[in-house]
Amino acid sequence: MELEAGCSAIIQKSLPKKSRDPGSFTLLVSIGNLSVGKALLELGANINLMPLSMLKKIGEVEVRPTRMTLQLADRSIKLPHGIVEDMIVKVDKFMFPVDFVVMDMEEDVEVPLILGRPFMKTARVIIDMDDGNMKVRVQDEEVNFNVFEAMKFPKGNKDCFRIDVLDDVYLETQSNFKNSSPLEKALSMFDEELDKVIDKEVQDVVDALNKGESSSTNV
Image (cartoon, rainbow, N blue to C red; front, side, top):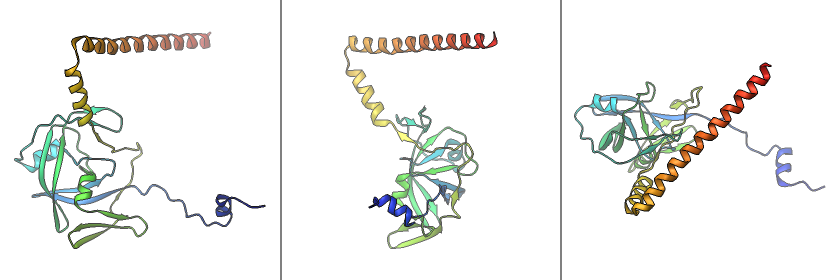
C-alpha cells in the first residue's frame, strides 16, 4: 500500500517539532533625555504609537493635528491626539527618525511605546527565531540582541496590539457623503435609523424569550 506524503512524514517523524507562541519582542529605547525603557515591536501595527502622558514627559514638541482614525483589535474606533514627526529614537548606539501617532490613553507600565512596521523598516530589523537573534542595522553597521531576553510574553487576557489606520476609508466615506444629493443623504440616514430600530426590536424579542424560558424553568 502506498501512503500519501503527509502520512509518510508523520510515520517517519520527519516533520519539524511544533513550537508555541514565543511572545512579543521588545527593545530598550530612549527619546532625548527620557529613558523610555521597553518598546514593543509589533508587526500588527502600521503606525508607531505613543501615549499622551509620555509626550508630556518629553517636553515641548510640536504636535500636528490629524483627521486620522484608528481601529483597535476590538474593532473600536479611536481619534488620536495628533502626530509628532521626526522624533529621534535611540536604540543602543543608533538613532532613528520616527513619526508617532499620539493618543490619550493609559500608559502601559511594562511597554509604554509601540513601534510598528514603519520603525522596523527604518531600522531594518531582522529577527531569526531559530538562532534567537534580532538585528538592528544602519548602513553597514548592526547591533545584535538576544531575542529570548527581549521577549514580552502575552498576559492572561491575551492582549492584541493590532492597529489599523482608517484614514483613507474615513475620508472616502466623508467625500462620498458630501457629494451625495439631499435625497441620497436622507435615505442613508433613514437606513441607519431603521437598522437601529430593527436591532432594538430583535433584542427586545430575544430578551422576552429568555425571560419566558427562565419562568418555565422556575415553575
